[in-house]
Structures are given as C-alpha cells and as structure tokens.
Amino acid sequence: MYQKEKQILVTLINTILILASYSLFLYYNYISGNPEIINDFKFWGKAFLILIPVTIVAQIIIHIIFSIVNKIVTNEDLPTISDERDKLIELKAIRISHWIFTAGFLLAMGSQAIGMQTYMMFFLLLFSGFAASIISEIAKLYFYQKGF
Amino acid sequence: MKKCYINNSIRKLRFFANEMTQQELADKTGVTRQTIVAIENEKYFPSLELAFRISHVFNLPLEEVFTFRLEDGNNEPIKT
Image 1: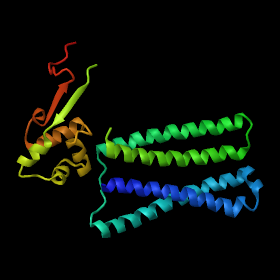
Image 2: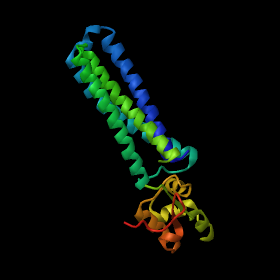
Image 3: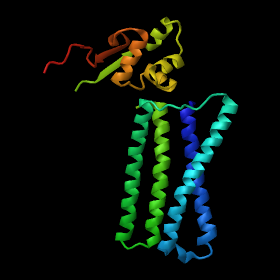
Image 4: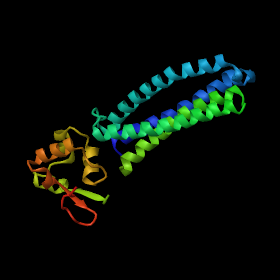
C-alpha cells in the first residue's frame, strides 16, 4: 500500500471514530438526561458549530501522529507533492461526496415537508455529511487502487 | 465513436536508460511514483504535458513512448 493510500485510510478511520465518539458524547451528555433537547434548535446549532473545529483539530493531530509513526516504522516521508492524478482523484471524490450530501439535504428537507419532527432534519444533515465524507475517502481508495 | 487504446513503453525505456527506477522518473517529471506505476500499468493516461515530460526524459518523440490504436486496428487519422 502506498503512502497516499495509507493517509486516506487514516482519514477514513479517523472520520468514523469522530462520528462515533461525538455521537456518544452528545447522547450521554445531553440527550440521555433530557430527551426533549433533540427538538431544540439551539442544541443542534451548538452541536454543529462545535463539531467543525473538533473535526479539523482531530484530523490535524491524527495526521501529525501518523506521519511520525510512519517515519519511525517505514523510514519513508509522506509525499509532499500532489500531482495531476491526485488532483483528478480528489475532484472525482469531491463530486461523489457532493451528490451524497445533496441527497441527504433533500431527504432532510423532505422529512420536514412530510411533517416529521425537527430533530430528523438535523440528524439527516449530520449523517449525510459524515456519509459523504466516508464515501469520498472510500472512492479515493478505489480510484487509487483500481484506476479510472 | 470507436474505442481507442493507448499503450506505452515506459518500462522498457526505463530499463534501457541505465535501469532508471520509477522513483527517478517520477522525480524528473514532477509526479509521484504511484502515478508512474499507474501509467506503466495503463491504469491512468497522463495529460499531454506529462506525456511530453516523460518523452523528454528519454529524449524521444512522443509517439515512441506512447502508441495510439483504434479498436479495429486502423490507425489512419479520422477524416472529417
């Protein structure tokens, strides 16, 4: 497996871990004590706003740790350049993630159109964001390994 | 439109260029080794610029590094 593929795998695992840990954090600290909070707009606003910096910081820390461990284990540096193939794969993956998020957004709006509870819209938005991110990483891995 | 095939002889040319490694070719053309591997295995077709860069490394014209073939084996230019 090439360095780039390892990086993608790390990002993928990291995204799944962030989703799982953040969901558990929200559940045990807020939802379990007060189930009614899931219909509160303020709660979801805070949850989304906190999630963004948490995700960015966690990704940076994990990638720093990964590059240090990788250097120690393989004695190879991570690629510093991003060539035309990398950029093309990135574009294709972004396009797939946009389609998935758009589908999630439409489902979220649809949930409100048919009169479902407010939390369903936020839940669908959160879930589609993570699904888009995860599938984008899987698509990158696929394109790197199988070609396109 | 007829399907086309683009083949290359990079692997052979590297061998004759004093057994140049994939990493050396990657460094000379400004791409990653992974991209050179993908081009050699015909899993990726490079841009025109990269194709010219690769030919330039071997000091050969483009058509000696990359060959173009149509599905029916006819390589005559398509008349419009």
